[in-house]
Length: 524
Image (cartoon, rainbow, N blue to C red; front, top):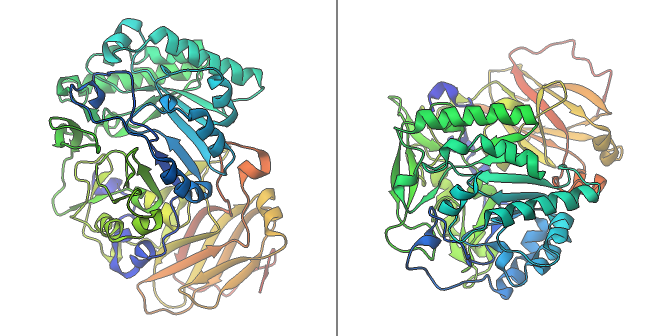
């Protein structure tokens, strides 16, 4: 990705002056957990390490480790059951998802739908927010070739059973979304558009296109210079067909679709604790503009973890970087420990990314104060802002971009000189106004005396005189007195966020305006 494509704030996220915002020792517990409860799998898919002749012994996350993680899990925003095995093969699968269902987090499950038992359809509908059914084929013969030992017809029938049970309960995809997951390979590329028709026939809602991260047979890679034009064409056809059927497409290969990828290269050998020599994973080689350094546009190590069945804790599911083992030390010691701290520090350092070749890799100029914008819109914020109390980008019914804040959200804007004012624009929903209980929103700039604003439902614009500062930037904390939770308030299973206000944009204006008016609000 070229420099012009990188949000202007991204480079300054590495600026030493405020890196402590990310590297503080008391980093909140992760909001997302990816847990592999078992490495068992009865399939031998051609693109998976389970197809290799030498595999590690069967492993299962111990009851003691899971019990020790229950408090962390209960405070997370979402939990995903995925990893190196089939979650539905776990002997206590129904018990596990029932326990998670009683917690706060939303639950996502990845499965081949080849392991099944009595009550599974009902239990999935009762607890799961997002169900990803890995097919990688639209035709039975292709499925049998890719997912060795799998049964295409049985998997399809079980997906249909779950969708039917969901519909009978009067639920929609807002309660539980069913995805068909597809990894483009040399042997299935041609039938990708047919997945949209399959989705419509069996009651699935969406199609996930994801990279073939793990490759034990490199000749299956569709991310190859000779195949890239066909891959882009099939993605475009799939989008077109899906749109005509009302099927949503989530494409994790946008870097391919947008023509940014140069080629693919095997970049490492060991992908999980149970792997054997000879396995590899595909990384990506990018065109590097002159005068730039590589950085990683990724916030995973600040807000999520992956736990493997053997107890290993990793920052991401696409790279083997063990931070510690829950069988040897408590989670807090790992999460706040030296391995994670060093990994996060490298993530914030241009030119020294811990995961070279990752799809998150970007090229930026050397971080300087000049990279910091004096105006930032919701759509300009990089993913690292998730660490500072901001949620993912959304659009309202009119297509206008916005972001929800958490209880406290922090942003940085360039100091344009003395006598400046800061303008903050956003929206207060009826739920936010109710949650505030008549208490004010607080804005603090560079740790100066906070200003408090009583806001009511509707759009708002704050114009705040900025205190003089010697720093090259203004660090601004927006603090809601309370938050509201869609899952708790309305039973929206997929949304367990703690929401503050809706943010649209903020800007530093170079001159103080003497006619500032607060007629529509009370400032104390």
